[in-house]
Structures are given as structure tokens and as C-alpha cells.
Length: 141
Image 1 (spheres, one colour):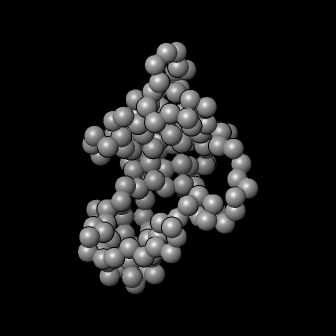
Image 2: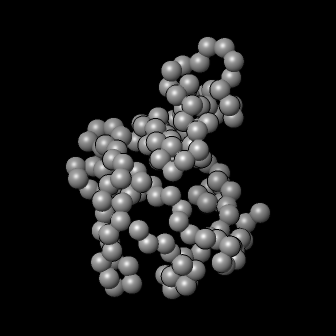
């Protein structure tokens, strides 16, 4: 699997910016997230009774950065937790994908992919760029 270089990011006019939720979506009128209250109000699993989905969420969150596949598992569970895989939609891990990069057909694997009847709807890919090789531009505070 290839890694994007600073030159490739520049060539494709890809710029990394930090943004608040409101500035990213260009509105402060956002719907209430379809997550559970316990998850929204706690950084760690609270003491006492917690629903099974919430408890599993906190377990995945706790190990998410322990190794590469744990992060993928957390991303897949989060999409399931938020009910992205409803109707004909389903989640795949390590899904083979092909795309054009600089005019050449490239192949890779998506860490997590949300599919709908065989079509890729959403791609989750671990960052594979060394940001120390270029500066990050931020116009938001």
C-alpha cells in the first residue's frame, strides 16, 4: 500500500484544516446525534449500570489506538452504533478497492467500507501521511 507524499497532496490540492463542527458544516443548526446519552456525556465508561451497546462502545474506544486493527474495529462499531448500516447498507473491513491516482489505476484496501448493494458509500481509511514533512494550514480557531 502506498503512502501519500506532501507533493501528491499539493498536486491534488488537498489541504488539511482544523475546524469546529459549526464551521465545518457551515451551520450551528445541526441535528441531535443519534447516539446514546451515556456516550455523549462521558469520556470513559461510568460506574454503575450501562447499556450493552454503550459498554461495548467504551471498550472499543479504550483499545482503539492499541493497534491498527483495533482502530478499524472501533470505526466499524461506531458506524453500526450510529445505525449507518440499515436497510440494504452493510459494513465491510479490508475491502479491496481500485481508483485512479495521477492517471494510473491504483489498488488498495479500505480499512472499513459502508456498502449499499455493492456500491461504496463511505470509506474509512487510517491516515498514512507523515505530517511532519509539511505544514498544516488552519484558518479556524
